Image (cartoon, rainbow, N blue to C red; front, side, top):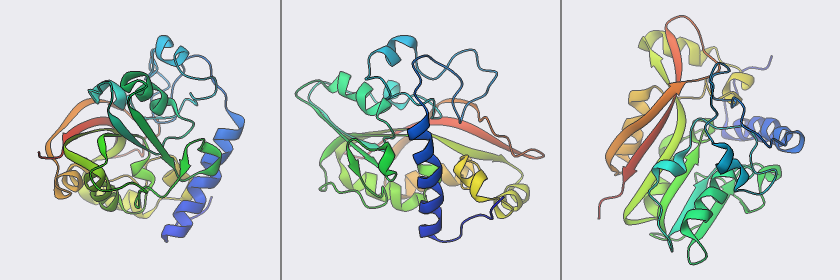
Length: 242
């Protein structure tokens, strides 16, 4: 078991190694419990109809929610998908924005990308170029969550919307800090030891400039730290002031 990666480069290397392997070996055609969801859940985050609506191979069983359901997308809009993976949420978004809209899918892992490879802390998009941004269980994997939210704020147009599903930690602050410090590369890539507390996560979104920050859905995370620390999969919506 390897130690928690300390540098941005080490974190990127661990994440791309593990999720690149996922992309190469997994091909799911029916709902099952996701990596960030509970094995006891009776339903996956995506319905059979949603899975059937995207190309074969787009659904990898990963994620901590279904942000597209809360993004309020409309025909003709431009959408940025941060950590697009094999494209599940990107394709769902494309179905909603239609041929007059556009979805920009970005992922750090080359094997995950049929769109564009990019570090989501530095998006290759112009200022105020997107109407909405979505992300699913990816921002917790980044070294600098605040930088990601500043980038999202930059690329959204005034009045633009954010819908993100991600993992946060709840518990006694001292216990959470001790857990994070004892984490490994494996627990970071499992979306727990790199996760922020819920309060810190929501604060990062507000500090970037977003308004109307709301938790609209939640469920338990699959991997639980134990003791006084709990991982929770939450879905958040927010907007950039007009």
